[in-house]
Image 1 (tube, rainbow, N blue to C red):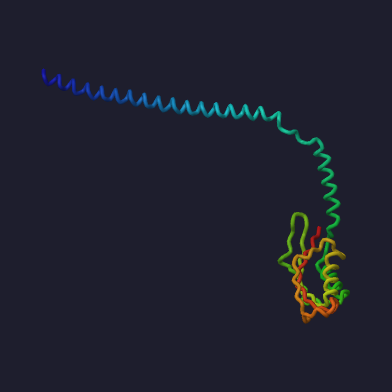
Image 2: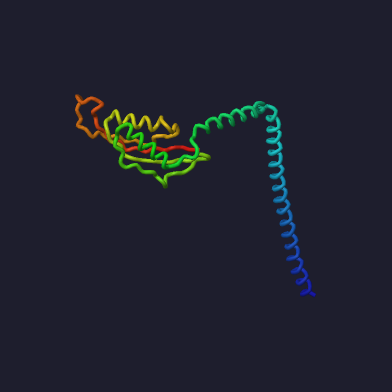
Length: 192
């Protein structure tokens, strides 16, 4: 009989231990779930508070101007007027002819004149034609040439680079009309 009691007590203790472990596991799991729920509730409350603050600020926000449509129409009209300034259907050869004839009229020597084919491109709805060259002559003649390039036939021709080098002897007694210079220049013509 003594052997039976030991077997019964030996089985009860591990079962009791397993029951206690299971009970502790259930309590820990409930605590974890409760904390997660509590954290989520705190986050929900924070979000509700933020939504209320935003809803309170909405009526205080500035209303958009009522004349946006008229401003848009004015801007479109201004863009159309500005677009007329840009020359359309410009032939590269015409631009070269303009630069060469301007050099001839200003009595300067232009060698070489290069159309930068790889440098052409477009920005939005406008195209760019780029040219570069070296011009030699008196300071007055070269100045006249550069001014006419910028202000004559093509109002959208921009001088993008200009390097001036004096080629005559530096002497203060020489008048400006006799000072010889060489100018390396680059121009960009914007076209429609």
